[in-house]
Length: 72
Image (tube, rainbow, N blue to C red; front, side, top):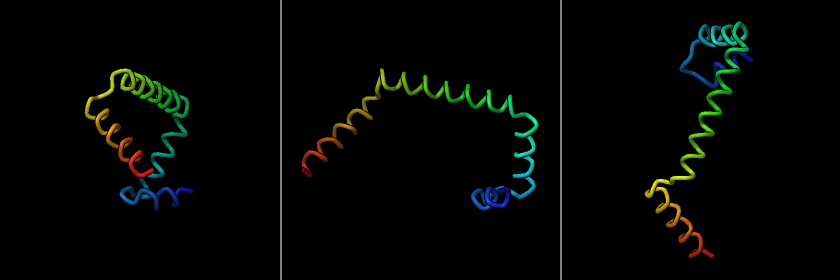
């Protein structure tokens, strides 16, 4: 497993991968809580973005929808 992670993230050394896994195992509750909080923040950010869409994004979506309609 460690070697697979190392292969997927070639910028990390084997020691860094072992260190990250060791840190996670030693602090599992805190890391899991942090990840849940980050997921909640991203969910809130997505909700706000959906309520107030960026005009550029809206224009791009309209162009994409028109392009798809033309291809049908």
